[in-house]
Image (cartoon, rainbow, N blue to C red):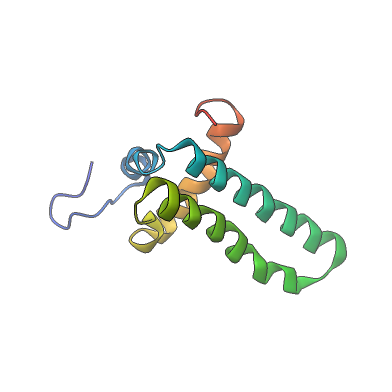
Length: 105
């Protein structure tokens, strides 16, 4: 459900169904999942090695995979541009939902 006066989502619970609609293509979802796994791997590598510059690669890897999924497979514009915080949260909720089988790969 969108906010009636502004046309913007005001609650994540309302945004997430929209987010899932924007990720109907299985390849797009798989690319999001791969990007999220690589972000976690970069975080682990950073903590293990103390090479803090690795953190700079996290948004490039995470968003890079996701945006290829959107522009090439979904043929839509990532929600990140309009809803950056909800979109980031949506990435991780969808990642969890894929891990537990709630959403198909």
